[in-house]
Each structure stands twice: as structure tokens, then as C-alpha cells.
Length: 336
Image 1 (cartoon, helix red, strand yellow):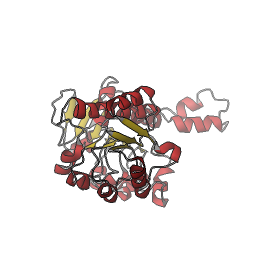
Image 2 (spheres, one colour; image 1 turned 90 degrees about the vertical axis):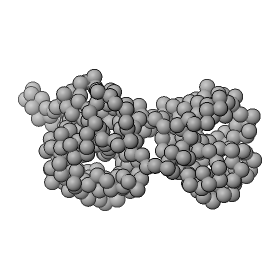
Image 3 (spheres, helix red, strand yellow; image 1 turned 90 degrees about the horizontal axis):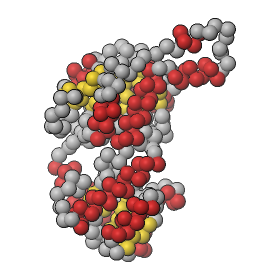
Image 4 (cartoon, one colour; image 1 turned 30 degrees about the vertical axis):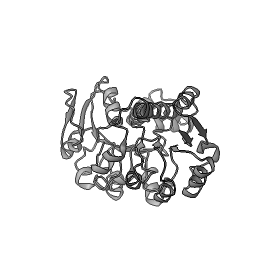
């Protein structure tokens, strides 16, 4: 089998491992190209290289691309959610689709915790004050002005308890923090964490984190019904997807000081529009440009996860591995 690889595989060990699984791997990463391949470019590349399968990351694998290449033996998507492929058409054509769940869970979990602490400890205002040469004769001026709070001892709620939420929970349990979560599809019992309904989570938690993909079920799911339940000293965090939250309702509680603040890494429009910037520029918001999952190690993770998926399916004959997403994604909506 000849495979076209457009996802980054810069880890030499991972690339060699993949090459050992197939007859030939044609490596054409999108990164030197400067952007993901559009449908026309991708179809042309598949035809030009004469491959039997595709491993992608961000390329647009539309229905047209799949119908033009119905003989593909599989498509691998090096992402936690295979949102850049038309899964319905792939399934219709009998093309197995693999993804790499949890590839960025560690990266997002670390940034979630780091940015919550940064906001709680007033770190950025303190840095700006220091760089502005505002330190006068009073030795305790900064100590009094920027005194913050510890994350330890707080209740942290996870809306969606998939790989990212679970990573954060395992890291925070040792602070210690009390972990609440809402996820009707997560059925494992773990007495370290408390499963609750959404209204209880928003009302009781000091930090509320959103960990949802965009589906028909989740789009706009977090609105004023829940946001209005938050404590005045609570912090809202979204490192997942912006459109699962009603942004007008979120903007209202931020601008009117109904919560302590927010940590945001995702926005309705990227680049942001005027409404997004109202949140980004608010003094009680710590905003980053969709980089929670942007680490060099994430590319290593997705390469080894994909290799393992393909080895299990094609070499070891495990046809029911969780990462074969066609049936699971089409049959039910998960908020993990």
C-alpha cells in the first residue's frame, strides 16, 4: 500500500515506524506549503502521487475529494476530532477513517492550569505595572495591589469529560482541588471526581472549564441559563470551541462584572471580530490566540497515536479499535 502523508511527521522515529508499516510513504507535509491543502490541491496531489491512502491533519477532505478518490483504503486524520473530513461520504464509500484522540490533551491541560493561575494571581497586570516603572518607594505596594488567590482548595468543573478534562482533573486532584464534571457519555465511576448536572456545576464551582466539540447538541449549549448561576468570584475557561457558548451571554457577564474573569483561547471568528475583541480587551479576561494545543510535542503525539491505530487495524487485525471513527461519530453525538 502506498500512502500520502500530508500531516507533519517531523519525529524521525515516528516516520520510520510508519514507513515500516506500508510499502511506500510519500511525505508532503502541509507546513512547507504554508497552509493546509484545499480540495482541488489535495485531489491533484492524490492523483499525481498515485497513492492508495491518505494521512492528513488540516487539509479539506470534502465530499468531492472523496468521490474523486473512492478507492482510498483509509484516511487518517491527525486531530482529536476529524472535523475536516466529510465522514458521511467516507462511510458511504466504505473508507475507514482514523483519528488521534488525546494528541493535545497534555498541552491543553498544562495551558488551562497555567492561565487560570496567571489570572488568579494577577500576574499580567503585575508585569505590566513593573515594566511601566510604577514601583515607588513603598516596599509593599505591589504586594498589596496584586495579591491574588491560590488554585489549591478550589472546586473546578469540567463541562465535557473527555481526554482533556480528565487530564486536567488528574493534574488538579493533587493541588488539591475538588473536581466536578458533567458528561452524560462518560460512564466510568471514579470516586475522586463528582459527576453532577450542569446547573449544579455552574453554581458550585470556582472555575468552570468548557471541553466540548461543536455538534448539533452542543452548539450554543452554554448560555445565560447556566452562566447566570456562576459565583461572582468564579472564573470561566474555554479552550475548546467558541460556538458551544452563546457569546452575547458570555460578554454580558464579563462586561457587567458578574464573574471574576475569563480565560479564553477560542473565538467565534478567527481572526476575531469587533464583539470578540470586546472580550479579548476586557481587563478581566486573559485571552490567547487559539494556542492551547500548539506545542511541538503534539505533533509527536499524533504521529505515534496514528501509527498505533494503523498497526492495530491492518497488522494486528483489531477491527474494532476506538479510533476507527466512522460508525461512532455518525451513530451518536458525544460531548467528550
